Length: 379
Figure 1 (cartoon, one colour):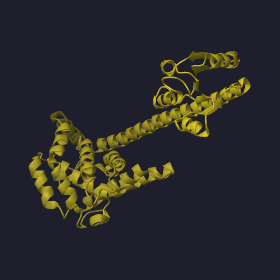
Figure 2: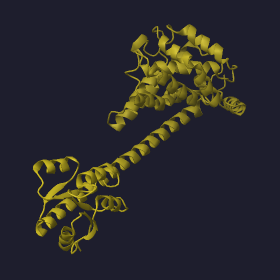
Figure 3: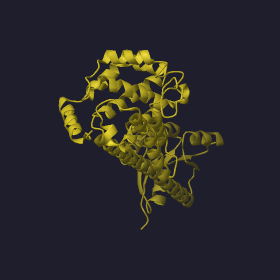
């Protein structure tokens, strides 16, 4: 069965309205208005018509004025409009088409031609509506799948970092604090001339998401070293330092299994591998110096050390915020990129708020002590 469409006719001529109704009513539902004002009122009453036939020469609000209003109203701008006129010039027709009309028919109207034009524009309108709806659907589906992938990524990250925490019970909320320090620091530096080009909003979020993986390599460090309460012997420290390479390699393997470029995993590798490098080249594992150290790793280096200083451990008390900042200040240009340190100092209130928001509780510390007592290898 052929679909019946709603056609709105706006024409002050009774004779022309009668002719149009006789031609179209066997096929469509036709509603008529004898003035531009009445036509606009009908056009904007939900649901809108599927097509509008609009006479140009009418008293009061003429067809051009009505067409302009239809095409600037969100409710009717997509409805095809066919202009009708008697004795119009090519210039008159051009004005109507520029205003958004879909077509122009000269009076006196020929019913077969009128019916054919109406059918054509209804079909074009249906196709355009389908494509527009399809595009909106695809955009929504892409957004939904992107959210799903992002959530899966977040879950995978937190699963991996939780695994690391089970091996190193001394970390507590360290991962959450450093992740938020790094994002706040990256946002601060995004307007700095040295870093603006590299720290767009998307890149900042990649760094934020990758930050929890900075110590993932510790999963492979033996308990006798990872859980040792005292100072590590030189040979033990060499083994501990391997966690930077082990973490990088594990993330690189995940990237190779993915089989495609993954900026998130690239950033995660940089952070895991290089966050123990030092500005003066005395760090590990490669002894990189200055700007040769990837920027995400330089951000993590400052965040990681600050958090270690202010955090309470089973073997030490927490250092005051101001004292930790002073150590960072004194280490600028040697351990850390001086501009990164300055940015960190500039947002010290934000950093302190993050530290307090994700502070470890006394219960957390008691749990860690119990864990370490059980897991501590015999000497």
